[in-house]
Image (cartoon, rainbow, N blue to C red; front, top):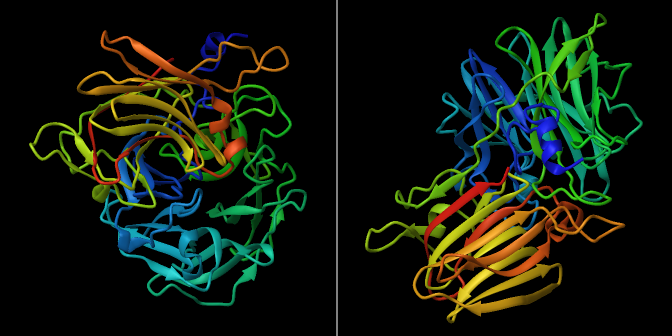
Length: 503
């Protein structure tokens, strides 16, 4: 089946189409009145924890980030997949709460913040130093007692299972010694991502099992009390695509929400692998939506195809005419966009990007074209991490395409640069070669080029996209477009960035 016909087949179906595409993993959701709010882990990128709003569960608008001040969490060193891991977003007693893990400040414990308005400002953090691990969850019982549930991890001993303790949210103090709750089905490893819910007289505990790779799954148990004893669902796992040919893989890490019409839904993460075996996913883990029904015995059943998801408008053109205030799409690994980019001195459109950092935006489509208009010297990069990227650089009167794959970094091609502003172009295209065993195609072909004097694209290189995939680079994030200075003593002057999906 051709790519076009397949896209037509699955267009809009929530089992195939993410509600928030690109690297937006570990979704957590809550509903307040008629409004839904959705948040994601953000790892080494700052601001932290992208936050979205919806009235219908399928169309989402970015309203900013939860962690926007460096006082809220310690800055990491930009190592890949460091920083902020999975968290939980909840609303209780007129206030929004978010709890997460900063693995770059691991020994300080879980990070708990709150706000009256989800758009902010969010409070400075309370640290739960007695709960070392990842993937924290918070929930309140009918008496107002808060319970923290998390995945215990030890640098020496590895996984420590799912732990729980009552929590004083004002001080971060655990009100009891942590105790073990349900440890999953016992059939899969990497038991993590707990979420706990009081529903119809039971306490339901939803877990992720099997790791966030091809074996990923959602399992569930219930108990009469938050601490248990828990009984697993006879139908576990209640969601997984492992050992199937479904185009959405790695499905798991679900969070349930009661819908405004009294029903239930769930958000969960998945990936869209492309190309030959083992399949290469390049956008990171994305957020998908499913309906949830309940059996007569009181167990959740996921209906992945219930919703029709509209085409997400990911195109943008940013002329940076409001600098130094940047659109919330712009983030920085291990740094702060507001200190990395500053206005052009003469007040004209554009920004200057300081040497030593990267200004990034997440790629959200499988096929796309992007342009960066640069005066003088600078670079435009497609990046997985600091060891896996394809880069266009304009310097010394030339445009150079280069590739970094692991320990190897080489220039691939160079050509004279046009006079004045240079338009650098990156694109992800369908490979011309078939996949193995008939050819050598990867998930896509990355085209690196620039606009020549006549406006036509000068292609410098066509590179295999598999080397900018999670299966090669590893980690928990996806591709980003990045702007950077190339001269250590001068900023890069970027006049505009344009991005458009190719559907």
